[in-house]
Image 1 (cartoon, rainbow, N blue to C red):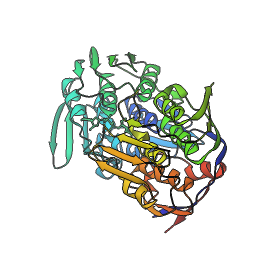
Image 2 (tube, rainbow, N blue to C red):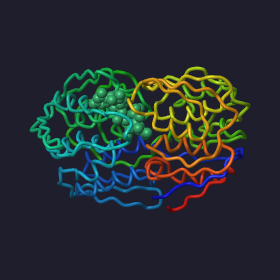
Image 3 (cartoon, rainbow, N blue to C red):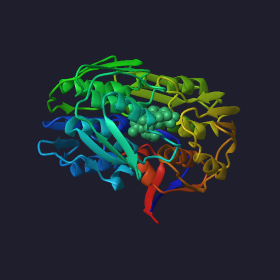
Image 4 (tube, rainbow, N blue to C red):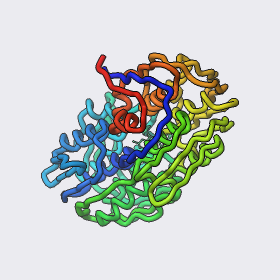
Length: 417
Ligand code: EPZ
């Protein structure tokens, strides 16, 4: 196992280049299954989730290789429809493969997906949507077996705007006969990016980014080269780091319009933020409690920034209530923040935080990807030395995290334990 050793208490100054979005790249890799042509994903982050997804493609018979920052995928000879259990268990986005593997091969077999342990993470909406398109699905022994002789377009109404279910249904619908309409679809920027990618492949997707997404099925899809959108969650993580540590940061390759809920909160805390032309500049001017932070589907406050925002609330003047509305157990970072001197009380999905002047260094354990990022920010802002263990969570979603933080002045190093 590896851990960060961090000497806290220094402000952050400088520029940081934001990576391509993990949660955009993963569905794009699932979409690459749909074509026998060559697909090139430019500026592809070498994070564990992407490498595992590329490995799943390889198991399906695709050739995958990196040339610099380009991930090149060639599916001319692919013919396997079974996603290995060991890989499926590594990441949630393996389940997105169902739609595209069925669309390409007419069959798919997958073990129940893994990913961050942040809640029950059911896939009922995925399976219900695929059944509406004509897929026969049996679930036995932890596996999902799908067969489909002919995909037929349908109207599908999601009980909740699930990101993964929206993407999975879009991926299957591209090869369905006729038109598919997804109502109560997720509106995340990553859904819009997937639609842009599919349209470049020759599909006709309308309405991505709204609650109603319409897909006209096509017979064949061409290979494409594509540069994904930037990672709004990585950008939000660095903005919160600046608010916690003080100093001034310039984020490059960052889209402020995808972060309006966070930026609004940080301005309430009294950060000075200026954004234009793919850059976001932030100057921390003190830390006044934001009062209430409630997560909700996009364009609401992102659940993927809840842990980082809670770490900031721990050192704001005043009290803050953080409500996690999307996942049942996404508070694993709370006991670790308390070990660092935070004053937090949890009741159900609400955390009540009383701000303290500063946190104190401690040895803490990350329980999931975004909790690990939050604990790292807490350690960088704290007085004294901290160790943040099990970096395997952070490595799933942040490329070169410690290198980027060190370049901004943080005293952080990775050691093997
Ligand atoms: C995606 O997960 C992201 N992952 C998550 O990011 C993100 O937190 C989440 O969307 C919400 O924005 C990827 O894109 C790879 P959901 P996903 O389906 O698709 C319920 C990170 O840190 N639901 O939108 O799994 C579910 O229980 C990760 O980068 C059902 O009830 O999220 C939850 O309450 C963590 N039935 C809500 O929907 C279903 O069939 C939102 O889940 C599916 C979901």
